[in-house]
Image (cartoon, rainbow, N blue to C red; front, side, top):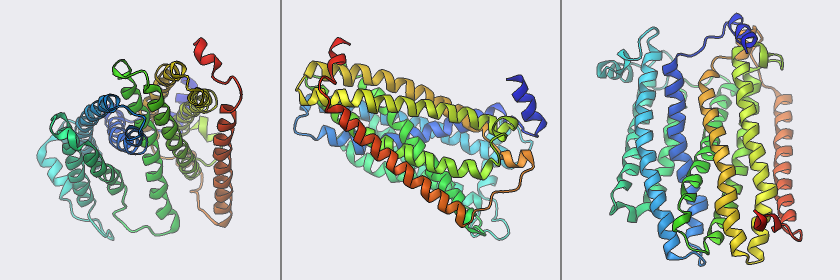
Length: 393
């Protein structure tokens, strides 16, 4: 590791300060808690709660836990959003201590700064709009601490989803009109990477939290959770595809050669992130090829004991490990700064027809592989005796 650090320093890589690491990781944690939770609740939890087979008691228990989780997510978003704004103020004024950037006057000056030459809007105006939306989203979620407000959980989540997406999309909007196609595509893929990653991690964290209600659920809750895991597996698969496609684009833009992954600071941090994401994908593959087939088999066999054991014992254990890996990814993110190409003195990446053709081929191959994964999981679930290990477990 010392050799890698020396190589990074020799290449001109600057390690971000501690406050930058904490604020950026915290900000993405806050986004995961809002974007990931709202998307997962609406796509995976709410439809399962509305199924005819779900008992009112089980539905009420999961709704209460979801509301409480979302309320705390609002608190986290509010706190991390504030510190992210302070970090932007400190970064805009090079050399300003982080503590000085907390002064209300400095924050006001940053938000009211005039537009740069050639910009269609002032960058501070975009941040003002972003933080207004952030405050409104956090307030709506924090209101779920009030029992009377929880009756409107579904409506609040429906409103919070587009608002939480707007928080990152507004901040990612260029203040200056992009001069070429690449500069149009860079923020698009960047936001695709952020949104898909936060949905993936935030959804996993929500389901781990909801699995903690198993002591208050009935014997038939296994069927409910089988439906939740099935629905979320599709969401996660889409996120994996989006993270992969956007990640390949961003890697190509910032890494000019494979050797730059271990000879530059940017590359080293990216290599660690890739290893963590591969761990997440491996755990997801285990869920898809081992747990989901057994859950489907137990469901068809009406084996409520095995179903409950698989969905609320085995599955959450694996997902907890995924959440730990996901949080580790957030910690590494602030260290992925600058560009390996710039550190190594390589030319900037410029897209052309061959790049887009190769990208289209990769997207097609990825789509085929994800479809094959789903079909293989379904085929495994139809094999006789697939759920046998569940009973033994």
